[in-house]
Each structure stands twice: as C-alpha cells, then as structure tokens.
Length: 477
Image (tube, rainbow, N blue to C red):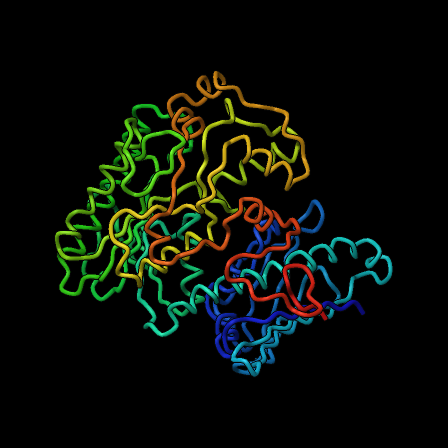
C-alpha cells in the first residue's frame, strides 16, 4: 500500500499547532492555488464526525471527494478519511507532538490505495506522487508562515474584526488567516437578514448599531480598477465605490459609543508620481486619475480620524496570489509561450505577496505606531522586463512576445497607461521602521510558491537547516 510521510518542526507548542488546524478557515489556508480544489459544502470547523465535500481535478474531469474527520485527540491528532472519492482508500493522520525546546512537530501520514488495483496505480501513481510531494511541503510552509505571524502577538488578546469586501481575494484570505489565528471575523454584506452586518454604500445604508464593540474594522470594498478601459462611467464608479463606502464606514464608526480602536482602510500606490526613484510614504504625489482617487479615498476616512480612531491606510502594491488578481491572468499566455515585456519593459513594478499583505493587516491591528498611509510592498522593485523574465524562468517558458506600447494605448487607453506602462518604485519605509519584514522578499520565491514550482526557500523567519532535511528544510521520513 502506498504511503506518504512528511514531518516538520514549528515554532509553537503542539496545542497551538493542533488548534490552528481545527479552526474555521484551516482547509482554505491549506489548499494550494494550483490544486484547483474547491469546497462545495460541509462543516466549517473540524470536530468528531464532521464532513466536507470537495471538488477535485481528475485529469480533464472533476470528482467529488467526501471526507470525514474522526479519531480526534485534543491537542495531539485527528484523521480525515475519504468516504467517497477517487481512491479506494485514503486515510490522513495529522499528528502534533511537543519537543523539549518548546517547539512542536507536525507529521502528516497518508495511507492510500488506488482503484482498479495495479492498473489504477499505473495510471494514477505519477499524478498522485506529484500532488503530495508538491502540496504537502507547501502546506507545511504555509502553516509555518501563519503560525509565525500570529506568534508575534501571542500575548495580546484575540480581536473582534469586521470586514468589508470579505468575498474578494484579499477579504477571503484575510478572513481565513484571522480565524485560524483565533480571531472572530464578521463580514459586512449587501443582503439583509443573513450572517453578517448589512450595508449598502450606494444607498447610504448600514446597520451602525451592530458595529458596536468591534476592536477593528477593515475596509476593503471597492470596484476593481484593472477590469477594463476607463470610460467616464467606469471612472465615476471606481471613485464612488471608494469614497462613498469609506465615508459611510467612517461616519458610522464616529457615532458609536464603543468605536473600534483602529480602522484599516485600504488604499493604493497610484497616488505617487511615476518614476524610478524610491518612494516612501511622503514621496511626491502624481497627477492622473488614480492619484485623484487615492487622495479622495483616504480623505473620506476623516470622520473616523476626527473621532479619535486610529486610521491606517495600507497603500497596496500589486498583490501576487495564484487565487486571483494579476497573476492568474498572466499564467495562461506565459504557459503558452506568449508572454513578454509590456512596452519598453523599463517601467518599475512594485509587488507584495498576499501572505505578507495579510500579515501587514494583523500587524496594523496591534501596533499603534502605524498610523496614516503605510506602503505595503516587498521592497524588491523590478523592471517589467525583469518581472517577465523571472516568470518565464519559473514556468520554463520563453518570453519572446512583447506587448507594444501602441497596442496597450489602443486596447486599454488611460487604464493601460497608468497601470501597465506607469513606473513606481514603492518602498515600505514605515513597515521597516517598526520591524516588519516580508516573508517573500524575492519575486522568484513568491512566484514559485504560488505556482507549485520547487524552490529551496530561505525567508527571514525560516528555521535553521535541519538534519536529513528535504526540500525547504523539512524533515521527511
């Protein structure tokens, strides 16, 4: 019977390692973006007898996988076992044990059997080997990242957080990141009577009274600026979606008897004047539509500032995630060998990995030194040509198909000139000053992590090399 074993050391006691896996959002945090696995229904939280159904790829098709959790030993272990799915047998033991040095070990043990005996093994062995040997080191590293970030504030109380835009790329990631860390998250939603707090910024409606008692409000909602050409109507929608929602949130929080200590209201780097010089938070501001939007967007939070609420504006660079945003749009043409630089390729590109962005939000919730605009970027700024070559190298594809400047202007107009051809070298000065360090300070490491390509990662918080270490420094037994 085929078996898989992977063991890693983590910087927290076994009880916290176990608790992280049992909380709402753990499965989502442990699902690699390239796996194409989707949760269709089931119990949100792991408990004895809980079940979840997944939709998993099987060649060109998709199959349902029903898993049941059992054999839970508090603080130590649990098993998820396939009840229905592509395997004859799949039993996955998650085992957490304490070490003498205060750290813990996580061991994943999987015993599985293919359907159709030797024929099934012959047909599926290579795909399954690739899946487990790629996905599980990724899962362990993701777990290490999250636990390390949460451990920074382990002595602080867990927070009650309200989030707008919770269904978006950043909002979903933030929700799962926070809930697995033990925080309580409530979304602001557009429908009445459901789970969450109703609001409708277009109509100026919000259930203000339900915001009483929250520690933090994170405001992420707003129309996508990169969805297509900017007609006058689209530009109005972009501006209004940011200013109206922000003003409604800020005014509502200012009226509360128990307002939150902090409002984290997302912003963008489009405020800055284009160029190649490094840009801190006090860098020169530029002209153009995006700069006007950011100025109005941040000013809309003034009522909360006036009420004494600490307001943080994360000015977010391009977010790298395999789940959404720019990266998935680039992958298909690059995989087909149709990738290439945009325009001259000399324009500077600032970026941030989604995991690091989520960590910035957590840091801003606790660290009172972070106030006002905060640049959220990795600090590694590259030219578009360098970005293109790095992605091509990771995917092992040529990058010979440039997108000329006149084509960008013709197809995308003003949006293309600002977003695709504009040059920004954004540096996270305030974050560096408070000691924040990005896990992914290398574009190649970030791209490999999001695309499932092997990479011996050595970020700032990685443990010392382990004896008998495999890829990424993990003990493999």
